[in-house]
Image (cartoon, rainbow, N blue to C red; front, top):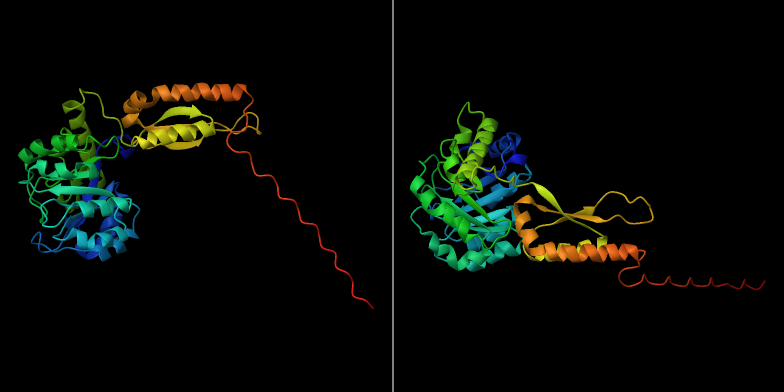
Length: 345
């Protein structure tokens, strides 16, 4: 199963890669088809281990276009969050168990246009995330104790929290993600996929000597999607995460109106010119595309409004496509040239 047909995504944790050659590890993971790079940042205080920081991530950012998910296992994320934003992290998740205010750091991440998340240890109840729910794009469920790679998967923790985390993010019409980290491999992918996980963080299973990483990534995606299909989706294959569908075909000025209304409800929209008009003097209509995963919601919310705008567009065309909006500014009069007298001789 290719990434274009998959629901689940695989984030490669580089904690178990060769830390002496991370640039090669990141490049290899990209070539083998991973969807994300998962960056485990440890400070030796919140967890016993010490890994790398923002400067290392910034250096790696230049080596790949694959999204970076930073998982900050540090005691003071608020103190350092600007550095990780500057380093080029696409999402930043930190632990709810820290001893400093959480909301300011979440708001700082979101203000920078990055996805913000909170992680929970296996023993932390998911309910502690509820006060921050509206600020969350990501919930990271740890199915091992943070700080070490290669630990065994805690199935009971996954069953208790993953599907509940999906409910916690129900306010996100599109873009909310449940990440699962710890012991994910081909044996456990189907379980977490069947619980609704979006991003599977895979570490040691990808970096075993002699392991075909590309095949492992494909297997884990396919098994996760199979778990989702038969556990949560009544046997129906899941909608691919990247599939887009046409939602409306409207004149440019009306397409802009509908695009704004759909976006205001949290649904992303792509708008582009729909081919060429038969008459080159007439601008072509615009096409609006939305993710297939939210098509049903978009139809429920915006079908009536779309019908209104379609009728308005037909009337506008029947009226000869009159000018829309303020008339263009009148051309400025050209200044008269100044004639200079020739000097007397």
